[in-house]
Each structure stands twice: as structure tokens, then as C-alpha cells.
Image 1 (cartoon, rainbow, N blue to C red):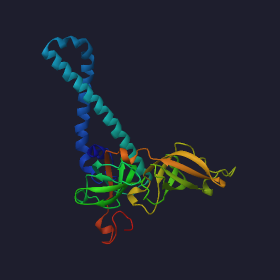
Image 2: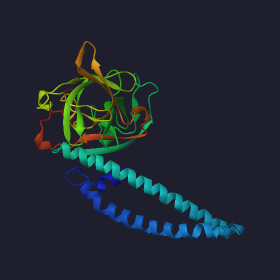
Image 3: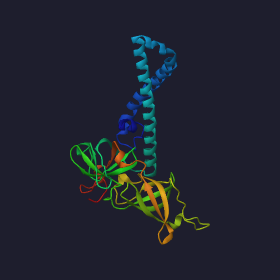
Length: 291
């Protein structure tokens, strides 16, 4: 799947995409077109031909027809999903340019029963280029958590909803490309985050001096200097609650929920920053984080 996603991304965004884009597209396009034509023809033949079930040969043909139709419909759904992933990754790069990211696709082989205490076990390790503090995501841009430990073939990821994760800064997006106020989010132990909105005078309405309107459903993106550079502007989740701060009614507290809960992840991508050897010193952490 990662190979197909990379094939649709411009080479300057993913260093490996230039090597795979053309051959993968050349495989997918004619195959999809041919399969679509075959299924269109078979759709027209299926119902009138149900009488074929009377013979073993006819029943086998109908079985193959149904199997092909099911495979085609599954492929269409996968293609739609891949297009959504490509769109989200592309948008993430547009609002956070200048980074070369390598995505390492890996299955989750062990998940938490309790988000406040357990980690995810991922089948990817140092042999795949995974290092501690790397960021695990789903669909390319939705944060799952941080890599805590990595051995040769496996790594453990702490969900970013875990109570051990320190508060972090995130930005509420007023529009897809328009930054809003910053909020400092803290995991609440139930798979969500809460935090006070840091009111920004520059975002107030100049005519009324009213605070920036925040509404349910607004997207929230991570923007914290203490996190790896590969996490900048990745998606935290969406606003699901807005309340006044106790004893300070003019200040607001938001509740944010991830779009994809870490405990439901069956496959993740580890984001690794591609850095030129000439651009960093030997002591610099590749992920751009203090050890």
C-alpha cells in the first residue's frame, strides 16, 4: 500500500517516490481500466445468465464472475482510500514545506487494552530505519504516537493519548489553510485531550474585539517545538467540546478527540526525517529532538 501511495506523490516530497511512481502507475492504470471493463461486461451478463447454475461448468463461471465483481468493488474502495491518503499527505506537505519524509509501513502486532498504560508493538525496527522518538501515524498524517524503544526488528509506540505524554501545543485550524489560536493539550486518560485556548489578540475581530470563533468539528494540528520535526502540523484530531474556563468565563477550554483511536490501528506508518549527512553533525539527533 505504501508503494502505491508513494507513487502518486511528487518526488520532492518523498525521496523514494521518484523511483517507484512511474512503474506503479503503469501497472495500476491499465489493470484498473481492464478490470473495470471486464466487470462492466460481466455485470450485464450476470442476472440473465443465472440459468447456467444448472450445469457444473455454468455454476463455476458464475462463481468466478461473482468473485471478480467482489474483487473489483474491493479494489475501488482501496483506490478511494489511497486517494484520500494522498490528498492528506499532500496537504500536510503544502502547509509544512521543506521536509523530506520517509514513510515506513508496518503492521501492529500487539495493541493496548488500556490506553493509559499500554504501548503498541510494531513489526518494524532499526533494520527498517526506525529510531526512538520517531512518529507513528495512520493514513499518513493522523498521529498515533511516539516510538519509545526500537530493537532490530520490532519497536514499541506509546499512544499520544497515553497519560505519560506531556502536554503539547497544537493549533486550531479555522479553515483548512488558516491557522487559529494555539491550545495546550493534555491527555485525559480516556483517549481524548483537554486544554486551555491561548487567546491571540491578532486573531480578534478588529471591529468588535470579539474572540476568535471556535466551533465543533474544527481540525487541530500539532505545533510543538519539543516534538520531532516530522510531527509538525500533523493531525491531532477535531474539537468536540468548548467550555468557559472555571472562574474565567472569557477564557475557553477545548476537548479534542483523535479521528482514529490508537487502539484501533492495525497498520501504521513510521515517519522518518531524511537528512543529508552534510547538513547535520554526528551528535545531532536525526529526529530533531533532544535526547
